[in-house]
Every structure is written in structure tokens, then in C-alpha cells.
Image 1 (tube, protein in one colour):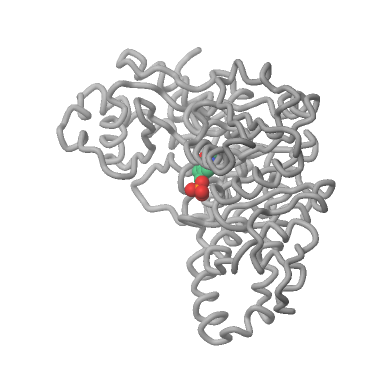
Image 2: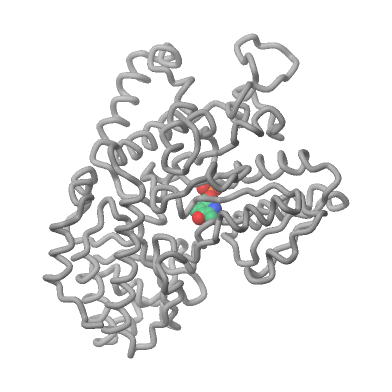
Length: 413
Ligand SMILES: *Cc1c(COP(=O)(O)O)cnc(C)c1O
């Protein structure tokens, strides 16, 4: 295929139905941001919204804001706004805690719904926190729980009648590989097990239909494609059909049926609210709600379509212009098998990313050798891809990444 020119890509931008969404973000000039899959960009409305919550709701109205500004309902209200992006009903999603903590709550809840079964299955090489949380559950009850972390190809064959839970990340954080959600969920149900999806690299980037595939449980991240801000709270999905049975292992007062009765005994709230534990962080929730405002009127299928096209173009541009420098595609070639980032392997990956960042092209590196480019259709332009690859080609042609200043590892990569 002929190499697209910059003008070709600029024409795609001119015809892009999502082009206007970029104005909903505050992006620094001179930067091409290819890391919105790790920390979403700042929505233009967020600073004023967070300032209002701080100055007016907290500063002026003080504790009254739990009622007058409905802080108490924020986790449910904001969950309801995430719901359409993931194929859930508004009353099936709540915002709480971090993804790590939510994984723990849901996995423990799932185990108690399958009392005769002891196995949890996940993927070897899953995002570390997902593995660690499940390892921690096994360590809590080694006689009761057995964790199997299996290679992708071997996984479906191991789902047998001892399996209580299959917990997978829909889009792999490194490769961008996407699980066929419907088929894996169906296979899990055939064995009588529950299916939990981690949507951290999916929500806000690809169309997910949790109820359509009959998923049992899901969690996901608020600060990646949902643009909630650093450390924004996570979300939990529990479908109506499981809400009565599923209990959280953390019996906090915010998940209580009547927290302001201040009784000694615990009984859980109805619905997905029982997945709350402690007092929600209102400032974090305000950031997440402003992030979701940036999706107003946006069809997630359009987002997915643009992401797929961007990924195809990025692969083509990198392979044609930089292939001879040893960058190997480390993501699926077919867009239907990918999420919204594209990765390449290179032994000097870390230094290449550092050299790119010095040029204002921000991607990231995942050990041992993966350079990763996140594609965020709301604020990334097609022409940005051309410019980013132009910089990448310049780095490689001029051996810029050989400079010692690009080789010192920082704590966060
Ligand atoms: C980003 C991410 C997380 C983040 O977990 P936190 O508890 O918010 O730090 C978890 N799982 C996956 C798959 C992720 O991509």
C-alpha cells in the first residue's frame, strides 16, 4: 500500500465527525500525546469544575453539600454516566475505590457465590495488579482457593467445573490484544463459572456490551480513556440479576442499607451501592464527572471506528518508515483484534521513548522492550500520527536514542 502523505491524513481530520471533541480538552502546545491510555488528557472544563467543588461546595457550603450538592449520590450518578459506554444499565455501575480494590471485592464476592469451587483462572502476563490481587486472595485462603494464571491459548481449555471465576482484562495493557468477550464469557458460563472483565484499557475507547455478552462482573479505570485525572476512582459493574446475591467482603458504612441510622449491625444496601465501602473522594469524583462530560453526545462506536483507523495507519507508517530500524509490531495487525493502543518491540525501547518525549511526542515504555502508543480519538488527530512517526523516524535515523541522557531509567516509565 502506498505510504499516506501528511495531506492525506489532514483530509481525514477534515472529514472526522469527532474532530470538534478535541476542543473539549486542554492540550499543551508542542506536544503529541500518545499516552491517554495511561493518563487521559485534561478536559477543558475540569479545572473550573474542580475549583467550584473546592471553593463553593466545600469552602462555602461545607458539610451541607452532602445533601445540597448531592455528594452522597455522586458514586451512583457518575456510575450511571459510565454505563452507556460499557453496555450496562445506569443502576448497574458505581464508582468507588481503585481498580485494584474493586477487583478484590468482586473476586471475593464471586468466590462466595460458587462455594463448592476453588479455582480462579486468569491470564499469565495480565496487568500486574490484577495478578497480585488474585494472588493475594489465594494467599488469604490457600486451602480454599487455587489461582491458575494461564497462557492465552491454553486458557479456555482449562475452564472446568472446579472454576469459580474467570478474571480477564479485555484489552491487554501491553500488546493491546483484545479477548473475544462474548465467546469467552459463554465458555465460562458453560462450565458454571462467573466471568469478570477488567475494562481498564477498554472503557471510553472501544464499544463494550457487558449485558449483550452476559458478563457477570466488571471493573475499570477512571483515569485512562475516561480522562478522570491522576488516580481518579474506578468503576464496578454488577448486573441486576446478581445484585441481590453478591456481597462485598468490605462491610463499610457507605455500603450499608441505612448508614445514617448508625446501628451496630451491618446489612447491605440494595443494588450496586453495596459495593461502596468508605466515604467517596468527592474531588476525584468531580474530575471523573468532568471527564465524562467530554463524551457528551459522542457515539462510542464512532470512537472505536476512528481508533481502528488510527491504529491501522500508525502501523503502516511505522513499518514503512521505521521498519528497517528493528521495530517489530507487538500488537495484533487486525483492528478487530486490538484495543486502542499499538505497541512495537525494540531492544532500545526505553531510550527511544525518552528521545521521543524530548521531542514532544509522549508515548510510554513497558518492560522489557515494548514501546506503546495510545490512540485517543476524542483529542488525537490523524495528522498527529504522521508527525509522531516523522519524529520517530528522525530519532532512529540520527541514532538519537544512543545518547546517555535517554538511557537512565526513571521510577515511572
Ligand atoms: C490501569 C489498570 C489498572 C489500574 O489499577 P489501579 O488500582 O487504579 O492502580 C488495573 N488493571 C488494569 C488492567 C489496568 O490497565
